[in-house]
Figure 1 (cartoon, rainbow, N blue to C red):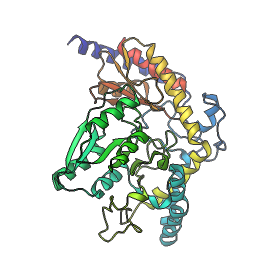
Figure 2: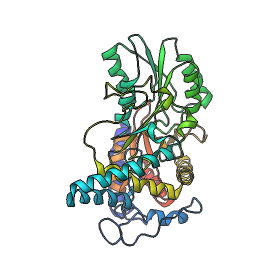
Figure 3: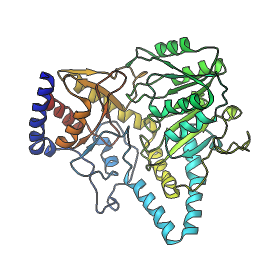
Figure 4: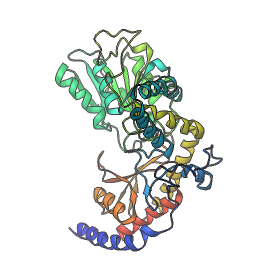
Length: 428
């Protein structure tokens, strides 16, 4: 009761201070340029030399977030650069001006630029990927498509997103498949610990190993080692990459996974409603199409049928241009620089328990989770948005009452300092 009362008092004081001070504090915010799309005054995009805020100033100018607002929740939904928004708008305009020609032109962009460009970005072949609306759709396609019999077992980890677990529960109800869960601590100690726990949980009946590349809380799984373990035992490896693609380089052939699903509107900053489903060519006989009864190994028909959002998918060409210019290794270095700064500031903050570890082998570059003593995470998200105009997220799962901060290339250390000061104001 005392803790709850303290939170209520802190809430009133914080909102009063936020309206007068925190929200108006200096911040290198992303500001719109000469019009609603931000076009006309942006500097030419080039690869930054370094990881500090100054080196990425021109990159930040390519985003049109409202001045005075900081966005640190792209692990939920990415903030597309202006060029992507403009590409999508131009696509819909093309369909309105001349529908048939617009449809054909957008289709060519998708076939000639988006699919091969995305395959190259992911270290895959173009015929190994299918475009989807999101990772959830792709995960379901993979789960529905795997050949399984009653009594076969699927092993998932305790840190899977509901989108990664529910398709297997569907298979359990429909087909009599058994879904087992291996507990993975949050945070875990090492890559070896994860592999060891998974290996112990496998049984002779395990046919699928389903796990995330990066957990919702930002823990980085040893994907290549887990996929190798699965392949040694003839088990299909089914990877959820929703929190990985766009944050750091992903090479699917090097990871040697059998399927991989990702949203492209999170860390890759693509248009909302874009995702990808990858199936390794060598496993097409075990992962079938969820849509076509007459699919073959040579024509696997993974692509969802029907009318699609052509302007949205064609807009991924602008996304690919953006990331190919920056280079994913540079994006990873920049996001790591920002999260390292955040972690340093949090360690200096009384009452904070930092749950994202310092080991780069087990923590992703961009997402950081922590708990603040006496503070409800869900309430804190609303307070920070209202009082400081900073958008973040909660992480009330895996036994945590935690805050999740996901920093991307357009964020700054100044914004991070403002955020930490806001939390100190809440706990004062």
